[in-house]
Image (cartoon, rainbow, N blue to C red; front, side):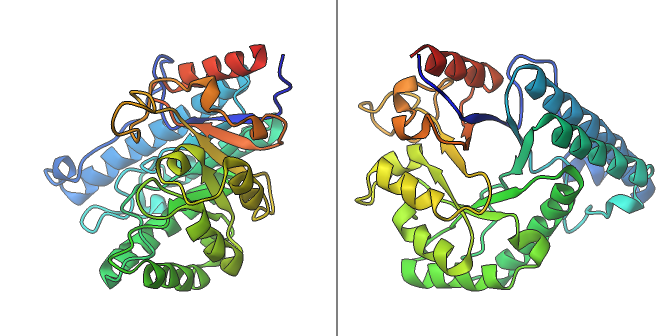
Length: 302
């Protein structure tokens, strides 16, 4: 039987457990006047704060040590037409207090919370408007992270835009300009198409940001580093509990494009180097909590 020290993380939503987060589209809100919009948004945000408490309570009950919070926990928060300040919502103060209660619960029960903004959050883009929108969204997620005690806001490096070195320089420059509330939580993750661990490690060392090592992405886009070498290098960038990602390809490693995620994680895809490390590993699998619980059992029994 393996000695597994890992804190496992569940990502955003549930497959079977009756815990649901609500969303709304800008098109739907556009049918109402501003007062009605704020009322609808308030109801959804308050529901989502309660659902988040249910989510972390589920994690505690099932010995899942971390929960990734969906980026739209406050839907359309920074939208140019229907965006809002939480304190402008009916019951805004109650909503914030409900999120702060999540922080208290997580602190008392040792549950870690993280954020992983959507792919459109880009700090390497040559377009100023893309960067401006990305910064606004990062500021919103940092605000919620402060309420709930989340210590990670994880992003990808973005696109290369025909010149990887220049894109990485833009990324580093934007990181240096970030507000401390964002920068103190920000992490970079290697992806499966553009930026490898080797590409991002230099930026991490220059800016002081940790590297979230995604082993699946690394296997899809290798860079000469072994899993053991990338693990060691990523660990060296952290000043708090490291966070890594694991997943398995939907159709196996020998069947075409391996980028898509399987419902579950093959325990053979979990690096043996991680088994005795005091780290958080978020399980990126379509079966969600079922996948986390199965992987925990598989590794413990191996």
